[in-house]
Image 1: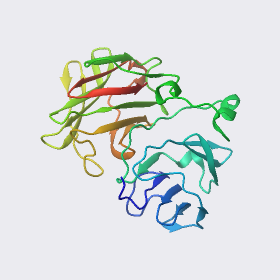
Image 2: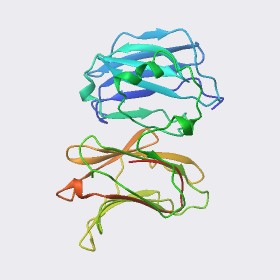
Image 3: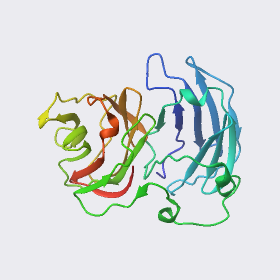
Length: 276
């Protein structure tokens, strides 16, 4: 937005608000001063600020941030150029949540394992120019029409990520995302815009379980807006974020996650990308 003076992105350890969750990396561009602040929050206390007196972002203009986590260092590139390094003050293994301030319109958040040989293509500088569609690789696909389904090869397991990006029509009433194990539905995510809720449930042996509706904050999906839903598979539950902010956890209700073999998306939505 052209009126924004700053925005922030946090790599943090959980979502607790009281006491506030530790933040391993606080990345905070400040347009008024023309610099970017990096810091960490440990036990509700900010550490020493690190400032980069350069502004790679422009108000009202699209951008791409790439962050490589390697050897206890966050290596940050903006729009294909190496921008800064930030030495981690908290072990990477504790980081499980990414939050992005509300004054940013997110188009896509994705995660990938980068092999050592490919590091030179991104850090320190990517020499070639690629379109967004050309750059996305691996198990990311560009969906067709709704209803949409795609196999989940290898099933679900801890550390598995699933990312669904798209646009919600202005007149949308609801849509849903299903993670299926045969005819069972291990995870049913059902945003309902009239009620302003995201309903979650599981279908086992043709019988629905108990609905869950509570959220960690307000519903972040809106009619007429683009979105990215990130489903992270933890040891005990699905952790689901919308547009970079945690929305809810959903404890597993099926015994064998590797039986999950299909992702389905149906309803009032247009998909732009799915990563399984």
